[in-house]
Length: 151
Image (cartoon, rainbow, N blue to C red; front, top):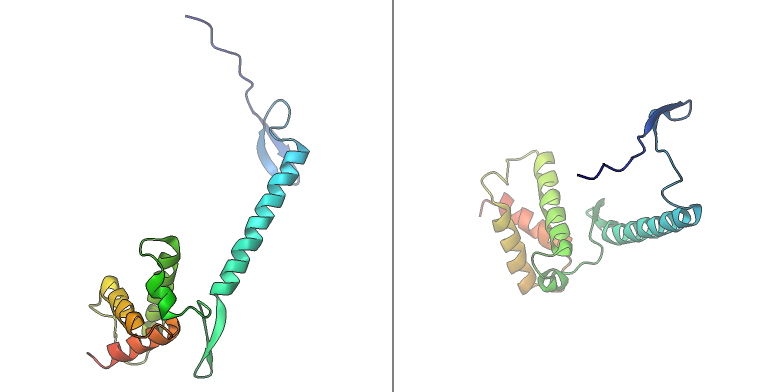
């Protein structure tokens, strides 16, 4: 059996700025130039995510209050967004969170008790098929009215 290769073992090190950590023996794993490229790419990704989030999270007016949600996202777009995609999952999560928040803050009864998320999504699907020009917050508010009426 051949001998095992020699491996450098990380050594514990203490620095006042970082505290106790481990120092890997040998040269740095990544060059300064490559590190700068990684930081730049990550910064670009962060900016892209923030821009997308900003587009999705623009405040919308509703009866004097602002709603943070999908900006200008119509029911037609909801209907045309393929199911089981990240974009549709985000919209569903927002809609269910919005419903839950309104329900939690309502002084009235619990209009979500006994409701399944799939049924709520199906109601929005049906509403949006019939009203493709309405925005998604409008459809969600219509669902809330329907649930509060007990139908």
